[in-house]
Image (cartoon, rainbow, N blue to C red; front, side, top):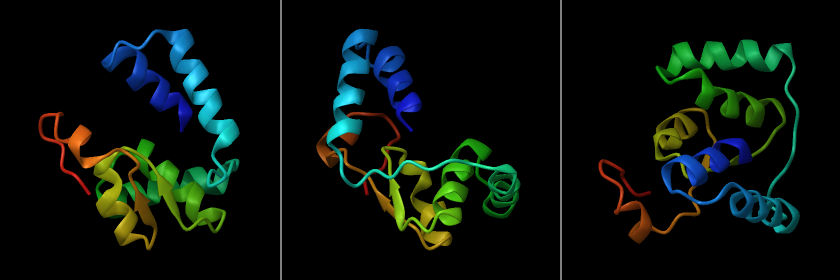
Length: 111
């Protein structure tokens, strides 16, 4: 979700908000693999059920529920913590961040 990416870019990495917004807009306009879908009540109920089943926070399982509800094969995310939950739900976890960049962050595992 670009909102989370914007938060990471601006608060964790110090990227100016205008530049972060421009980067994310460019990504959204040029990334053919990104599918935009909406949530409904059933998606939210599924997200909470998955959180309990998988022992993962509902913010992450919301993304899983969206993908599952819309027949999407996987998630494009830098959240390495979703690797296991994706695998357990049959979704592909695609992390576009190079392993060399991920290694710079303490406690972060690469794909």
